Length: 159
Image: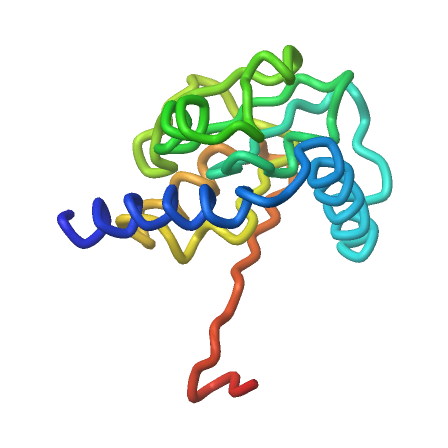
């Protein structure tokens, strides 16, 4: 638990340093374009507006950015810190998103989702098994679950 809390501290520090010299509007345009390319390369070109969406661990610039007109939920354990410490993030900018401060493992919305995205987050969770089980549980029986992870240089995947 202490290790996870330390990692969360450094996550906020990283975001503050990363965003420090970036123009908010330009950065968000780039992120939106990135997420649209990501979806296209994933074979998801259009999500019907009647399908609800979960961005699990979306961070301050998650895939939730590109779904106005949809019912979107985003959960992240650092949500309030993003709101307080990052000038590039304000919940008010996304009135179509229902935000929840929660880990994936503890998130309990009482519903399932047609599209569940957990992008570049799964390697940050406290309990990998519990997080994966929760993501599956949160995906409706006819829904889609898309999980990705950034891989650092490892012995399996050298640069």
